[in-house]
Length: 122
Image (spheres, rainbow, N blue to C red):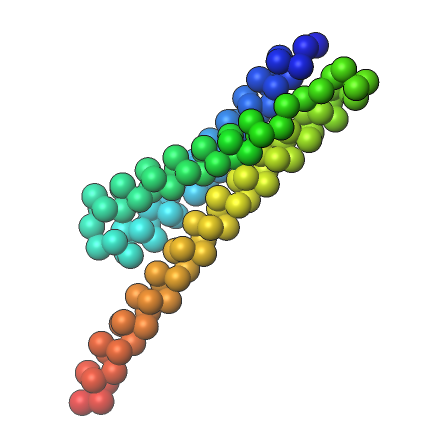
């Protein structure tokens, strides 16, 4: 097995993992974004943007590591190291997305609380 082939296998596994996470998060993310954005069109854009980000960031992290079989390392360990970088990128992308969404949710709920307060006083 060559280092190039191992590198491509790692990128393929990274893409499969990223696509699985995108599929898993798509529906709940769309629901939240429809509520936050106000329209389905805006939400669809931000879901697409999030999907691209969740796919590309792990791929970039995985591309950062190139397997080195010349040093006598086992192929599976080299692949595991590349996938470790990919999962770190995936975690980074999902955490940043969650942080941004939670900050908008707090802002939204704060606006609703202040708008509802005068009506409750009547």
